[in-house]
Image (cartoon, rainbow, N blue to C red; front, side, top):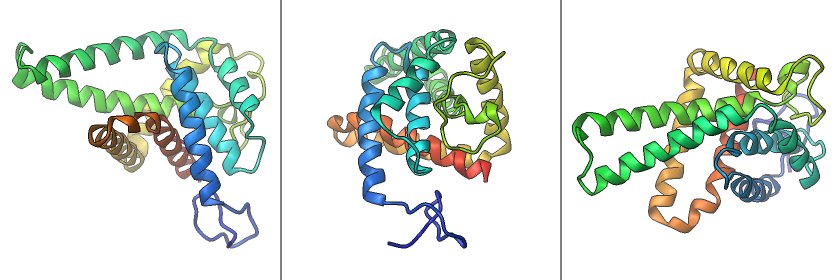
Amino acid sequence: MSTMNATGKPSPTPGIPVNRFALFAETILAGVIVLLLSVPLVTAPAAYAAGVAHLERHLSGRDDSLRSLWGNFRRALPGSWKPGITTAVAGVVIVLNLLLALVGQLPGRAFILPATLVLAAAGAVLFLRTAANWTAANWSGADWSGDASPQPAGVPGPQRWALAYSQAKADALRDWTGSLLLLAAVFMAVVFVWMLQALFVIVPGTLVLAAAAIKIRSNR
């Protein structure tokens, strides 16, 4: 196995070997755990933030134990309730609109359905970028290693999530190609579930991996 950097490309200098099968297994495992942690809906932002941090730690060769993932989830919870409630409400509205459109009972379907799809796509990209930007590496000035250390002094949970959201909006425009790649990942996840409903179990893992990959790509 050749030595590669975190992007999967050959590294000109010795780096961390990327075991693709191990990454696949870690993605599936992290995805299942993120799915379980997201069941209450309002905990989804914290769950995805922990999932992204977990895969970042795996790619950087650091501690990627389940204890580390759980620790990141607990640290991400403070201040995540506002984005969590917003995500839950938006998700319910989007699903209801789609279901009503499917049975032909959505008023103003010609306008509301396209608007719902556009907002859902933009919301998904912002959600994934915000979750990726939560990790402590952003505030410590370290690399993309998904540090599970406690929150930096002077940065309370709500402010930390506000900063992550603000950075996500800037990144969405600055790195528009990354946003398109995230959108493609979301689209493929929808297609997977449409083809076989049982694949919903792996969807969180693919989205977490996509968010981590785009973050790494943007920071290099």
